[in-house]
Amino acid sequence: MRTRAAAWLARSLAGLSLAMFLASITLYFLARSAHVPSSWGASLTVVDLLVFVPVLAFPIVGALIASRRPENPIGWICLADGFLWMLLTMIDYYGVYGVAKRGSVPFPVAIYALSEWLWVPTVGLLAIYVILLFPDGRLLSRRWRPLAWLSGAVIVLLSTTGLLAPAPLQGLGGIRNPFGLEEHPWVTDAFYVIIPLLPLCILASAVSLVLRYRRSRGEVRQQIKWIAFAASFVGVVYLSTTVSGLILGPETTGSAGTSPFWFDLLVYVALLSFAGVPVAVGFAVLRYRLYNIDLLINRTLVYGSLTATLALVYFGGVTATQAIFRTLTGQEDQPQLAIVVSTLIIAALFNPLRRRIQSFIDRRFYRRKYDAAKTLEAFSTKLREETDLNALSNDLVGVVRETMQPAHVSLWLRPDKASEGEQAE
Image (cartoon, rainbow, N blue to C red; front, top):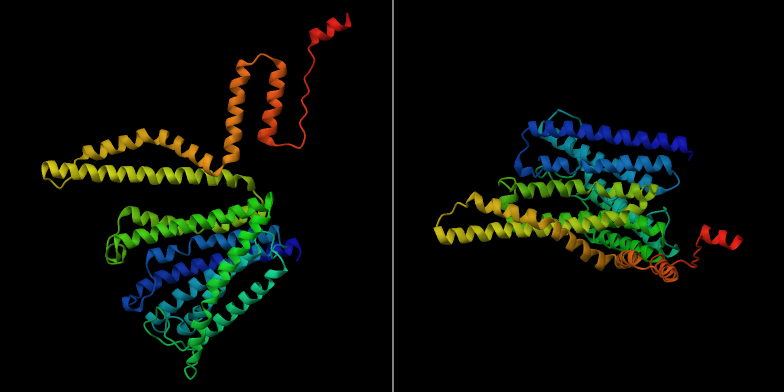
């Protein structure tokens, strides 16, 4: 495909995805105004709508990649995945609104039933083929072709059995699937037999990316670091949110309860972090600021550990102070002085603790660069004290060999002009 035609097609699909998202917002508010019964289990909270906001990054980044690198299928896969996400969102709210308010829109149940199979290619494109073909759009080797074909077959079979399964539609109060083959209940059993193959294909794709990373060097390794970092960050944030929700309990985090501010903030961070995956894909494929990933990982490790440590010290200090105050005075209310003192302690610990964590992470994860920095620091100290030119020359060559590890080192010293004049006389 020519670059101009590819750019036009990619931007058109991205624009259509954005239009479907705006339509989804309208249908969302219409569905809320229709007073959908809570027994339906429909996703009509603000958080449920915010889930799809970061997904907008997929069609945008996909269009950017496809218009500039039309030969790389990664951009088209991201674009198609974002398009399917927006379509899935729109038909969900369309069906809920149409069923809740009869006669408002045509064929609400039939259109809603399409989501029973549409989620399968949406998940498969992102979790399997982006990982399997990243970053150049090619398989690691011919040995991985069976996995690509198997994944495609699993997606097709799951989509077909999901669409034709005779079962109630989730979120519509028990309405049966209009496309379901009621006389063939084995279709539902076939769906549940095939569905374990999907996570296995995802796991195999992840193994392919790990092997690609181990065999790669230079630029390709930096590209893989981008998507690995984004996926790891999303996983850690979602895991933290899940564990926090389990600790607080459903009565606190559920729709009927009032969750703490920090938990709501963590939920929003988890939702927004998902946008980092397509952004990382765009940085890696377009090779924009490619080598900044090491600095980004370093800073994330440092400030993530620092934040967790300071939060633990703060809440631990406040809790301990409250317990001591309650024991001594018998009062339940915590004095404001305890919070002020804890805040001052956190402020005093910030810089020393940051330096210690930075030093630990440099030694543990960036040992080669850490050793090089220490070597240069030692040489700069010696440079201020050494007066012998020959000794400095040997030390300089040694430092260059140790830190940069070149194939050959040569040192040229400009002759002294005074010495040249004496030799001429």
